[in-house]
Length: 161
Image (cartoon, rainbow, N blue to C red; front, side, top):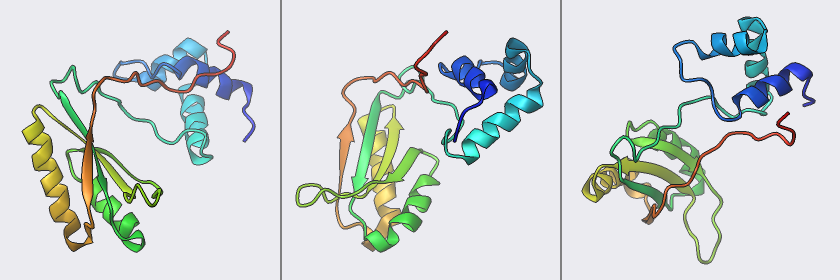
């Protein structure tokens, strides 16, 4: 997809995130001197074309008191990974869930689900719940705990002018 000038304006204005206000698209439209319906239409078009995967909040779990973050990794049958991923991704404590390729013979896991807790026991309880959802389709799992906070950023254009 080729970007037009409006798309580039929007991307540059939002690369650090949307404004944290009640009506972020309206403020963005005001800042860019564009109608809000143009902003929303261009964002929707970029999302439909795969330029933007999703628009959502990215909370700082540490500031919210969630000090334990675990990427649970699961070995499930490939024929079931999509449906199982949908089920796991709908759990209220899973922040993101996705299918990843195996890297045999060392890495058997193909389903990843990130969970957060105030204690390691909270995370372990959530992982036990995921195992119950997966049932007999769980052919093995592990959890990788975060050891440091990584800065999350959005799109960065080559020219920030």
